Length: 409
Ligand code: UD1
Ligand code: UDP
Image (cartoon, rainbow, N blue to C red; front, side, top):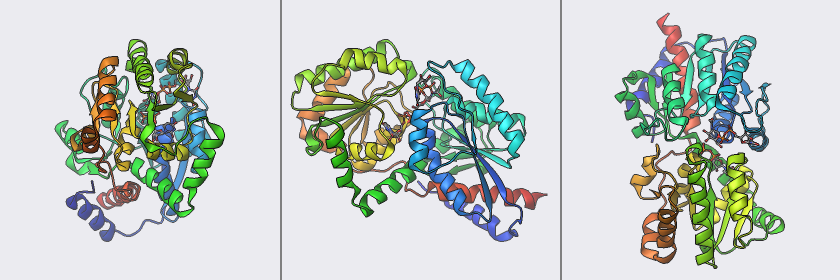
């Protein structure tokens, strides 16, 4: 999970060999959705710590609005540029076109030395494309995730492949991701294993919870705002879901499975912060809105969501980020997808792919509810996705990249 020793040596020796440049490196961070913001926040903070070396410029496309603002508020990030692009039921072509033009303008105004993008959203791809046209190098965080199926996840698999093509620095979260990139013939010297920055974000929240004894604050907050009880960990199933390829039939199946589980297990409570995408809101509220032991709630701020993950007996999700976070708590994660680009958790035994068929979802959940041996097998604390220091490594690598460029001149 760490920078390989050869890469560490290379960055360190470059740092030593060269004089520190007087000119600050202008780093343009571009992101637009909730998960990108969570995963980018610790990197921006790390960049801003080193004011003598870097000048950070933050541009949000606001592909998400409310769910993005939740994260910006939590981490006190004030964007220098806000393209405010989100509209209800936005289409992929319109999103892409608006962002390509919007980010290109920001590049022209701000003149960055490098752009940093994260993940595989339409923001990620469009921003990288804008940087390419402007001949600005791109550092891609969370590079190398692959299912090798263009339709799953859609459109993320293609977004991340195209972003790799457009990037100079590939910041892979795991060894598995690095291998994917090398198999695709990316130069070994441009690929770094740094860990996933989501673990940096998660740890920062956990440290805050520990230090200030905030746990009791969130316990009281949940009690005040909702009619469910989080004191008994054994009864809570946490659900999130939003994948485009599941819209329609897949989502109906997921909702049916949740309804059946709730009906057959009156002692459990299902807590589901419903994603704001109308393709998710509609079936979720129509099918599950009246089920007594299913609690549909608005998307939570990251801090209470972390608290809730920690209180869950198991997590049912199709989210990328939640698949990475769940194992840190030793909580089994059942992934409602047929494929995953995050097989590290599955290999470690803390996650399982259960597809989107109602029967398969209910039978796998029921097994974990009824069989304590099966449950124990999946509930070990493993952390294949990072150690909380990815952001530090990333900023060191970006620094090394410019030192090397200067050296090569
Ligand atoms: C997007 C990303 C997906 C990522 C997910 C994280 C693409 C194509 N999809 O999917 O990769 O995993 O975010 O959540 O890049 N909406 C709001 N308020 C918000 C956010 C969304 O109302 O704060 C509604 C709007 O009606 C919007 C719709 O959700 O039009 C869809 O948002 P969009 O970003 O296009 O797709 P997501 O499903 O959120
Ligand atoms: N999350 C959150 N509030 C919620 C649900 C999720 O803060 O109500 C966080 C979660 O901890 C994870 C991220 O949002 O870090 C995942 O976002 P999402 O599932 O929307 O996107 P994906 O990771 O699938 O791209």
